[in-house]
Image (cartoon, rainbow, N blue to C red; front, side, top):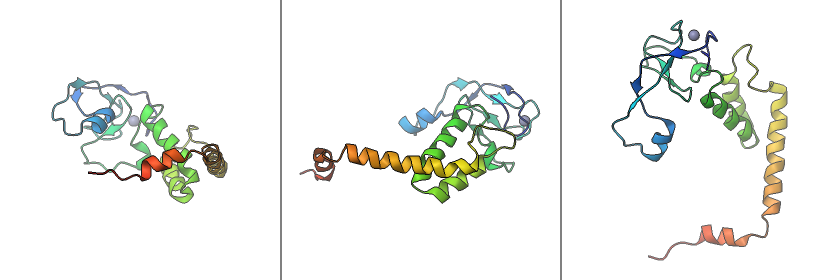
Length: 152
Ligand SMILES: [Zn+2]
């Protein structure tokens, strides 16, 4: 993983207790976490107390103002996920997701496709959606299942 600001390889920091994304989803009320590895920038670009967790997501004390393209480390799972989500959802709300994609752009990095390709991602998503609906057009059972209200 690399620092999103100066692009140097991150080094291991002090082990800290923090919540992973998985825990946040499965058990958000957990109060104690085991000591986990952290990653920090050797140049301290994002503040002294900021660190990246092992998914590459930034944990910060909130003292510094951090630009939105620095919330996840380069080459990390967190950044890949953020880009993938916006690229696939361009077909549903193009302007909104195009805006959040442009906030993720880092100069000189090629992990986001160029802007002129984004309408093609949106179009591909729309076509896939139509194909999906056409393929599942006769499955009325699914609809019945979801529209049924349980009898108590
Ligand atoms: Zn840095």
